[in-house]
Structures are given as structure tokens and as C-alpha cells.
Amino acid sequence: MRSEYSRIYRRSREDPGTAGDEGESNWAALLADWIPADIHVATKGRILGADGTASPQLDVVLLSGDYPRKLREKKLYLAGGVIAAFECKNTLRKQHISKLFSNAAAIRKLSTPNDGNFYGEVFGTITYGLLAHSHEWSPERGAQAVDTEIRRLHAEAKHPGELPAMICVSDLHTWQHMYMPLEPRSHANPIEEEYFSMTNRGKWSYFTRSDFMRWMPLEKDFKPGEGPQISKERPNPIGELILCLLRHLSHRDSGREQLTQYYQKVGLSGGVGNISTAHWDPPEVYSERLMSILKSEDWSQLERLGNKHVGHLP
Image (tube, rainbow, N blue to C red; front, side, top):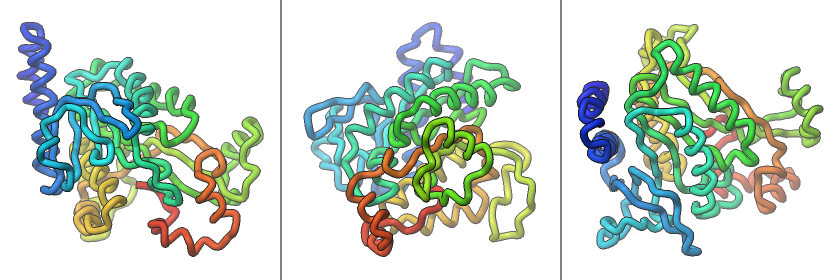
């Protein structure tokens, strides 16, 4: 990706439109090489909701295996068959991150509701993110600049479902949105307790937590087969992107879990550290259907709705 960026950058002044198209094609080709073969990768278009609402323009769209072949080349993609969508940038700039977060809320409204499922109610049916070859900052400032902008926009979010799932900058880092569906109030730390008192939250026996994570050096060595073996020296943004996307796919299709787990065990993902956190009370996030189950304390019903655990998602 680095060599492709250099080639595209040299030509961008002559023909910026072609440079943008080439960048999108690079990402589309990479995803097509690494995601499951039954998923179709398309470029350029908008997502069409069942009510006729169309999304902003998108650069790369992943379509489910059952998406009609006759409609694959149509540039209005039916929301019910869209698995993931991405904006692509050759050079990531600060304003691109703001636009990503605002568009994420619009994309979320096009997702098919999945009431009663932690993953479905927060992430929806369309995984949305941004892919960039490089960035406008110096190598020393790049990660911190993106961290700062994510923290600002994360704090402004009204619902975790309105947040993008990932940001990948191929020569820098991959940022992932991870979500804790239920955290016991007894596990809250002093900083969280202070936040609850300031915002009038934390009155329920459980709270929810939304985190943005990116690669951090691991502090512990793993034996072969136990966990990440690489990325202690440097981040692996492309590897993190592929694994993050596969995690999302496996939440929708349990048949994809084995490959996802394999990549995790051989070390495709390195250590990740938290760079931003936001909290909500469950009634602010979940549907009436899910809240009725939680209030009943008969949580056995959750499994029947596809809830495997309440750990970090995805």
C-alpha cells in the first residue's frame, strides 16, 4: 500500500480524479483478496434504505453472497444486502474524520433493526469505516492527531450505534470501535464513578461502555498458540483491519468464527490499547424488547436471540 500511495501521489496533481479512483481500487482489491470468497466487493455508489432514503456517496461496498447478480452493477445498493461500506482517502485529513462520524449516523439508520441482540442493536447490519493510504501529519504526530479527533467526536456521540466501526491508515494504525454490552456497576473505577455523578448516569445496576482502541506494544510474551506473536515492535494496520472486519462478519455468521479465531491465535492482531471511552446506561442504548429481558432477570432468553456473551464486541 505504501508503494501504491507513492505512485498515486506522484500523479495526483496531474489528475486528482484518477488518483482517487486508483486508491479505491487498491482497497477493493485488497479486501477481495482477504475476505470470504462469497462476499462481493463493489466500488462507488450509495446505499438505499427500504424507505427510499439513500446514504452519502461511498467508495467501497461489500455485498452479501445472496445479493442479486443482476443488481450488483447498479450504483444504488439495497441496504438489506450490504455487509460493510467504506470511505477511501489517499491522504487522511482532520476534516475527513469529522465527516466519517457524521456519516456513520446516517449509515446506521439504513441498517435493518435486530432487536434483542447486543451486537445488532449497537453495530447494526452494516459495518462502516474509513480506509486511507497515508495521512497529512508527520510520522511522530499522526497517531496522536487521530486520537485527539476521535476523543472529541466520541464524546459528542448520542448513541454508540452512531459511531464508525474502524479507521485504517495503512502506514500508521487501525482504530477499532469495541463495545461492552453490560458492565456491572460494581466494576466501575473512580473515574467512571465521577463521570456518572456528573452526567446523572450509573443509576442502573449495569452500564455500557464504548471504546476506541488501537495497537499498543504488548507488555507480556505469549507462548506459541496462546496469543499474538507479532506486532510487538510495530503496528500491523492491514492485519488489524482484516481481523476486525472478520470479527464483524463472524458475529453475523457463526460459520466464519473458526478462521477469525485462527488469525487471532497466530498473531494477526497485536496488542491494543484504549484511547477513548464513552458510557451509557442500558435504557439509553437498547430497545424495549431487550430491556424487558434484562429487567426480568431471565437472561436465558438472550441466548435465543443470538447473544453469546457480554464481553467486548466485536
